[in-house]
Each structure stands twice: as structure tokens, then as C-alpha cells.
Picture 1: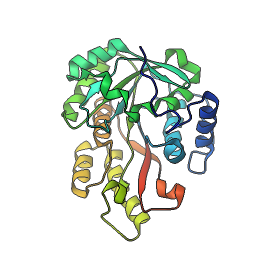
Picture 2: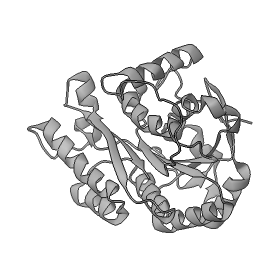
Picture 3: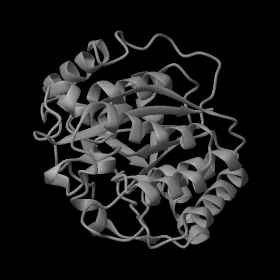
Picture 4: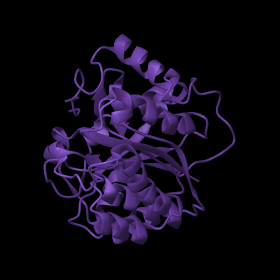
Length: 288
């Protein structure tokens, strides 16, 4: 039994051709990298951070991150860290995931090892209506066309019901013991500003202040300092929905030998629609 898509036709097109067209447009967009990925190079990346809003808003930003995946060595497994917008706790999905591009297979053997090592239960219900992982998959399939039969994922929701540091250590230990080449994908938007989100700490110069607020958080991410990142979020109140997936990614990647993060691109939904009354920040980061 596969996990069926629940936001196809909403966050992204439900038709194969239309989806392919929109992702191509995300890469070509003035907010995107400007062109499609070139051939794979002899480099390995350990992780990316990519947004999970509707593709018309955040797809161009996601394209920056997935261009890095497309031009790096193909990983044995992509661990996709999402969150639960409906309040479910941390958990793993063992089902294969379906998108308009086809089925993405889960590495069930590795998933069960992570479940035992990190104390993460299996809960398909938590994943059933959650979009944060789902919206990453069409992009991952798009940039893995040369390896679709070999593409494997591990979908994990990480919430604040767990100690993200311990979870990260357990996942990293399992990765090291497996000998697999792994890439971590943290699904997160950045600050949600405005009355719709109950967060409006500034009334003037919203664009500049929103950029400044998110760039402060991103600085700690690039320094691979999960403590300071989480402290910054707490001190500023920045409404970064995927803060736990981001912090978990940082610590896993550090355990795997990461040296730095690099900001690829940042903009807000306000830049897309020309209205900052309610705006969400989107950032693309790669960790090597």
C-alpha cells in the first residue's frame, strides 16, 4: 500500500506534464537559479534545506537546493525530515510514496534500524495528511531522472516531543554503521509574518526587517550551530515552522563530517506577490 499524494492539485499540479512544466519553470524563474541542472560532478553533499509552500511561491527557491542535489553524487538514500502541521509527534513512514511522477520507494530495512536506534515509532496516520515531506518528492524525482529505479527515501517527522540532538546522533550512528551515502533534506519555510500567522513584531520596513530576522537565523545554520539557531528562534519568536528538522539536519551533518553550510538563495512570498502584509520567508541552503 502506498501513501497517496494529498496536496497534488493544490501545492503543485496533479498532472505529470503540468508538474514537469512547472518545475522546469521554477528552475528558469528570475527567483530560481536561472537554468536547469548540468551533469553530475564528483562532489558529495550531506544535506539541503528547502521550503515546502505551494510551488508558485517557493518552488523557485527549492530549485536552488535541488540543483545542488542534481549536480552532486547520487546518494544511496535521501532522508527527508519534515514536521507535523497538525500536531503529531515524531515518527517514521514505511510506506512507499506516490506522486504524479510515480512511486518513490522507502528503504524499509534502514527505516526500521533508525526506528529502533532513535526510538521513533512508525505512524502512517501522522504522515497521511502532512504536506511538508510530500512537496519535496517531485523535485527529488525531477533531479533524479537518471537514477529513478535506485531512488530511495526515508520520511521522518521530527517534532518537539523528542530531543533532536539524541535523534540526530542515533541517525548519524546508523548511517555510519550502514556505510551508505546519505543526503539529508530538511523541509522548512522560514518566518511567517502577519496577522494570518499571529506574528507581527514590526510594522514598518517589513521587507527589510523580515530579511534581517531570517538572515540572523540562517547565519547560525551556516555555522552549523544548532544550539544558537534554536536559541535565536526562541529569543526572537521567529515563526520558523521546520526549526526541529533544521536543527536535526545540522547535527546529523556535523556527525557525518560537515564543515559548512552555504546559503544559495533567499526571498519571501511578499517578493512574489508584491504585498508584505502577510509574508513567508523561503531559504535554500546546502551543507557539505
